[in-house]
Amino acid sequence: MSSTSTPVRQANFRFRCIACGDLSDAAGQDFRCAQCGDLLEITYPAWKETKPKPQELKSKWRDRKLSRRDEDLSGVWRFRDLLPSLDQDYHAVTLREGNTPLYAMVRCAANTGVRVFAKHQGMNPTGSFKDCGMTVAASFALLAGFRWVACASTGNTSASMAAYASRAGMRGLVLVPDGKISWSKLSQALDYGAVTCQLRTDFDGCLKLLQELVKRAPVYQLNSINPFRLEGQKTLALELLEQLEWQVPDHIIVPGGNLGNSSAIGKALLEMREIGLISHLPKLSVIQAEGANALVRTLREGGGKTLISVPAETRATAIRIGNPASWKKAAHVLDATGGACEQVSELEIAHAKAEIGAEGIGCEPASAVTLAGLKKLVKQGFVKPNELVVLVLTGHLLKDPDFTIDFHRGEMFPESASLEPLRHPPIVLDATLDAVIGTLKKFE
Ligand code: F0G
Image (cartoon, rainbow, N blue to C red; front, side):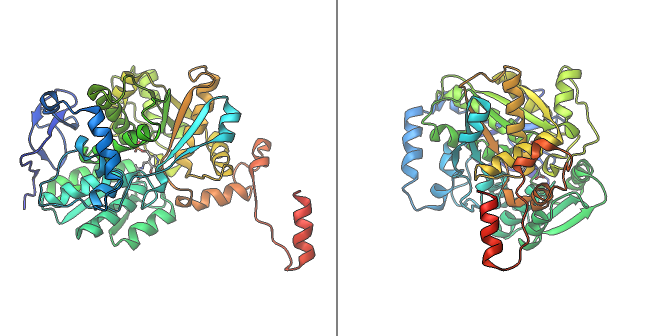
């Protein structure tokens, strides 16, 4: 077993440093450039010669939907022509991730004056977009011969990693901030069999510790610093464009935490344009919570040159991150696509989450920043009337029931009149027909 590097045999890809451009065939466990220490990304030099053919790819991806093979039924590996390839003898570790629905958001559209769709990544096997990256990174962890995989997490990564580790027969080590992740996410990590450590620190503290750990122990990190994760998460954009029959939306709006997902979607869009799958780019915008707005401040106050870290605080615990690892990658794709970076308040998040719920869709608080951000971007004129906008909903409604219950019971922002019409508190009644009929009449 190699405990120090991820070997690449006859690979269709190489690692490239995002800062100095150094190319290498293997990456250390910290997934940082051996020359300058910055993050690595995966690149496909052979595409220049093989020139993937857009029409062939599109029909191949369509045909695979009719197959019964695991790799074809996965909404990630179906697009494997644009992913790092596994050795022939290895199978992907898959739970049939991806294949997530694209919903028309009729009421959100009426309220904002733009055409709104939601790409619901919360419909993945463990309830978040993490599964799309995890299937690829876990497969490469297995291929590299690791027994242990590990992650720091605000909850969703740990749930996803725990599931994929167990499916692959690997052990999972989870580091989460004590008391700062939702019970439902924690319960997933426990049930899927990970060794789960609640550390007395925040997410950024957990991630820092993990960086030290991978230098000392043969564990493979499955955070989004791992570039295989981002390759899997690219497929969100491929699947989305396929669902839109390759009609490019005007905007894609995504929540920003550690900034891996926005980086992945942006990378996919740039690669799709390079190959000719799309002729132009949608604007990719990132929305953060006001209390965890490192990228917003970095771009506004620091000109995007050096990261401005913040002490993070928000009830959208999934994005309670103050020192985002992939900020440079995200800044690059925002710049390349002409997207915006905005922040939204706790009140705006709660409001938007209830509106998404009221459409019968539902999502976790971190995902709702997308709608809250869209409203701001419409007001600012950045998103124009009738434009086609896709919100990326990253996590399932059931990921954070405490937030939802507090909201509907009126325990969250009790003084806010604007939220009242959106609250649907449970009603305790005597078990009589009269009481129920009386209630029906009241709500007529
Ligand atoms: N939405 C949800 C539901 C998340 O769980 C996360 C991140 C994000 C958005 C932000 O994505 O980090 O790629 O910018 N959750 C991580 C975790 C950090 O540990 O589960 P990002």
